[in-house]
Length: 247
Image (cartoon, rainbow, N blue to C red):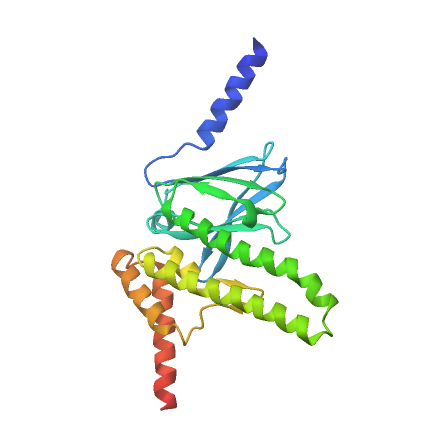
């Protein structure tokens, strides 16, 4: 009886820790092979990354609740923001959440970004789609790399692999453009525009300048106070000024 009571109390405490009110954000998940590892939750602002909380998982389970208790937290929860779940050693997920959402993640702790799934928020789901699409490219490139290195002196084989890799890059670039055009009112489209792989930029800033400006204008109508949009506007103003000075 005492054991059942203790288990019930522990469950109540766990549920209370993940309780959501009004404009709060709840981010929880279950990571297989996560055991009791430490998971960190950070907010990625335009000025840098701020660690908000950390917790040791219990058999792979974790839960964070971001309360809207003061002006700063209320402002942060009022608009979609970038958050990062981090297990260390470059093993992390970047997602988007806003007040009132309860995000639920599942993943293999050995490689979060390639295995995770999420529910509970449209922006978070779109971020997951972007990561999944990039993972397809990355996995294929990594499978080719040993063969490429083995035949680095063979011009014919090397050229064929490079050509196939560029086909993948071009296909993914087209995917990102299509993604942005189909989701112009989602903050996840910013992540699509700036997505990279091994320092490769898919959407060149100058070539796709019009696409980025249209996206920024559309998002500003929906999220006029978003710090990301305000930062993007300032960046565009500086670029326009530089172009004027070069004339």
